Amino acid sequence: MNKEEHIKYWIDSAGHDFETIDALYSAGKYDWSLFIGHLVIEKIFKAHYVKNNENRIPPKLHNLIRLAELTGIELSEEKKMILDKINDFNLEVRYPEYKNEFHKICNKEFADDQLQKINEIYRWLISLLK
Image (cartoon, rainbow, N blue to C red; front, side, top):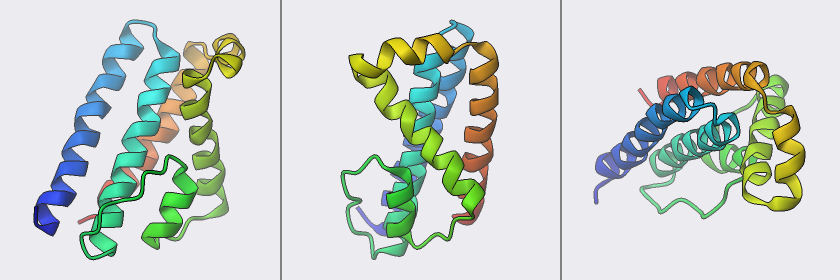
């Protein structure tokens, strides 16, 4: 796969997942919509990794801040804080010890706020790929 195809793979995969967020949200699965939101951001960072690292395969990492560092994308403190929170969604849905607590706070209002931030980060990262 050449570099452009590899980048397109990650962008297309993230786009598919981005559409999935709406389906989960509409079904009231707010926790899973945030989990998928994490995947969307992760995949866009992996597109950046491919772009900025000579088409190398991205590392099998889920930490968004670490992925940003590996891509060379500079993050403001505000974006670091947002990404740190989004990182939590990866853990809080996957692992039972976090899942019950997350369900208590993951209502529609919480999801609305966090999905808006995910959307902003997603759009920003996509714009940097152009």
